[in-house]
Length: 255
Length: 285
Image 1 (cartoon, chains in turn green, blue):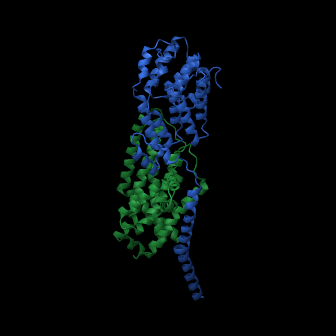
Image 2 (cartoon, each protein chain N blue to C red):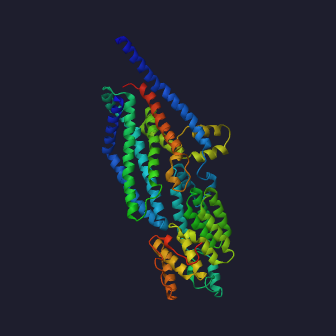
Image 3 (cartoon, rainbow over the protein chains, first blue to last red):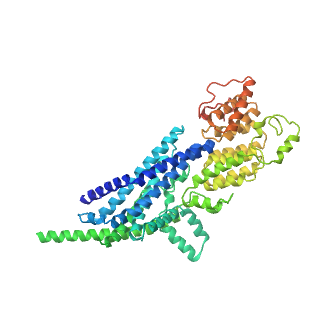
């Protein structure tokens, strides 16, 4: 219980820190402007304006939140190591699992806040244009957050063995891309043979399948890729596994 | 007693370390090793394989970006805008010259003054490849499918291509009744019975998000079949639901013509965004 409160305090501090970060505000403003620009693009779509505004807005929200998540998660622990703030933290009775959990939870909450603000901006614009709330909208925003939970966990893990923030962001970007490419990878595996096929299989099996959470792309009429129970278990696994691996790496670090 | 308590707490701590730093990570790795291949092998892709996407207008880089970022839907939207821009621009069509030389064949026939009936006619050679590209990216974009098939069958007079296109669309969206309805309408259009085609597509135009092109077609067919009040209602709905300048101007013209024939608006004929309020006297299936 004590460890839980320690993690809670670190998460709260991390959320406040992210909120006060000027990059956070910049990203939200940037997304707001882009979402507004989607209104202009929507006009070109004539009778499909509602669809274009929704799709463009959701895509921009995801990319903006992803950019912030990668930057923040890649630097949150390394910055504390570089600035030696971490020594202050560990000079107190703070267990390492609680510290890592708190840092991750703070980032999850920051991203939820960011997505919430952007969704509100977009929904206001959609309603200002006189359109109804798209039926899959809330699900799409929630699933964007789920994808971000996975990538944040993975980035925190990668940042512990990566040599620089840039390389962490690069590796994570590749992971994000490959995770969306799984159904196409299946096709490529069927077409390839020998070592190429094995390599592709290894890549495809051990990267998170972001397409499972891509409700934004399936819209209202696309089939659900898996049941909610499976998706919840998959999400839990992909959030907790990198955290546990991070703990193993973090234990060996000397502060 | 104290020694016993100390050794107990040490054992507990050792167990916690074993659990957190060894047992749980190994379990997590095993779970990932199991679920990764399992979900990969058992999941049925929601989208067509990438070899269904044919390159149009140097789209390869754009398509690869859309696929790798999971943005098929947005890419389909962009291509639909391009399709409408393409179809909205004049096509060099030799048939236009041919029509000019043809004798007046009567209402609704090529060459006659009722211009709305011939909207969208032409060759438009990129129309089908562009539309197929959209559905290869997002097979659930029903309105794009209806718009394309309707234009192909009724405006561009290429019903065989429209049928092929709709059959392709039904592969990934087999439960889409709108495609099946349009297929039936295309089938009946060959029998040169406009009233029957109009009746078949009525459920489609009752949908609030029905493509305006189909509403225009329904109105035209009803007018041609002598169902003037139904045509009038549909033109009114077009006026209230579309932003497309051509359809608005054409509807105004048609409404004026129908009112000139002594037809008054039936009460509650149309409501804002209210295709559902359309009424077709005696022709609703």
